[in-house]
Length: 102
Image (cartoon, rainbow, N blue to C red):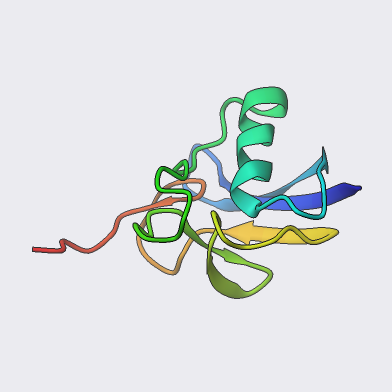
């Protein structure tokens, strides 16, 4: 299956623009795997937080996918995905500044 992925990237002025990618994937893949594929094979300039725990425990991979806040390491792919950062201050592309957890 191929997924049509739209990612909210920021330009040099901090403005959001949607960039389209066509990504091969399996129906069992997770959104985090699709992001890694894009970074490694299509657009090495995309900024995102890779999934480290791969089981949903750390929450650092949280993003908005098709309008819902999800952990990308757990969220299944869909044929069309719109991926954007959480509604927090954006550092770049899909990377946000999390509040201090202390």
